[in-house]
Length: 438
Image (cartoon, rainbow, N blue to C red; front, side, top):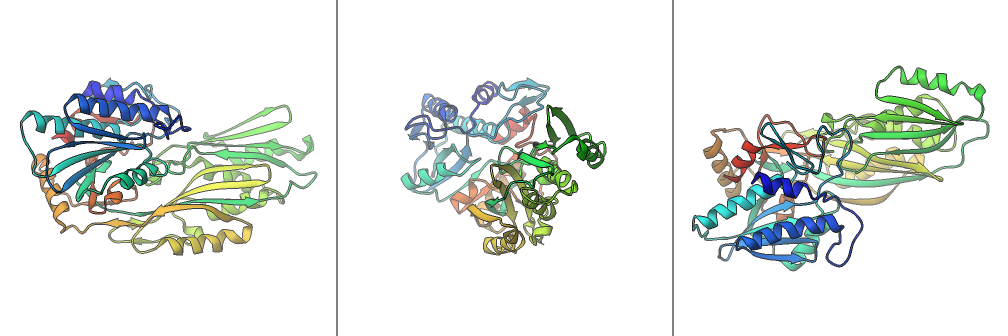
């Protein structure tokens, strides 16, 4: 099991440009899908590859399908790893690598569980269909394509979150906003470019701005040092006339923004504190005023309910250049608010500053009552194996359980384990991998 996971981690299945009719998300993701399906076929399971968008393997017979939904794509590795992110390094009962926890480790555990059933001669009365998606970390085109070809299972789960079980997933709104701006006023400090972040669903680990002083008499270097106030996350360097301002943060999953430090938000605060006016400084100052943290408070979005918890808002990416500012927001919202209300409030707070929503997608909240047969059955299995009777959970993350309808997220992270998805030095413990398979 460990060797299989190491081999799968070694495939750097980050989404890239299409590479042919059977590789819509790039060659490496297609290679990861081919790897698991070939392995499944070798073990005697029925397999299908749907043009590189998704695939499945099946075991058993019956009129109803039980679905197990997994994904093989991963987010970019980012910086600062102690061990190479695409080697599957085994150290002290931990397998390190991008995807070890999210979601390649669970994929390997599920396949070994199915292999054990087959080898023991256990023939389930319902057909088990293990579905592998390839675009979960981006736009879910994989599931859209797959369910155009195949019916949805009657019930199922996605091992892509936490134990004991996730019975509520917050709604998600992924928004792109853009604003135009005029050139910087003559004689002032010119803001040439601002960039930051890698994905909307990752807390930004780095951000930078390029500045061009009008002349040496502006004292910009002293002003910047005063604003940064010895912050160790900030570095300044000058090459010729251009000053580069860099901010380092801490990456985390956008559904758990409290575990990270958003470099974009810190950069915006520094730029706004310089007090420049006109041109790109206006939309930058507005963003700094309205997005000060991950609560959404200044946007009028802060809210929470007893079941699903608090709304979170992650400013995941920013690009400012050539007359346009573009930002990507990842909002996870509880049952007590809806997407239309969120849109109205964002337009009210940012629309007056020239920002317009140019991209929008998302999913409503997903909730199965604790009394549902699926929840009760899976909880009973978990309790039997662990002796832990903790209640089911609500999360801000989105899993393939929502694509099922009658589905929940089930494992692999045990209570008390660190939340390492989308972070550097992601790992899964071998003992936890074995427990998940059981």
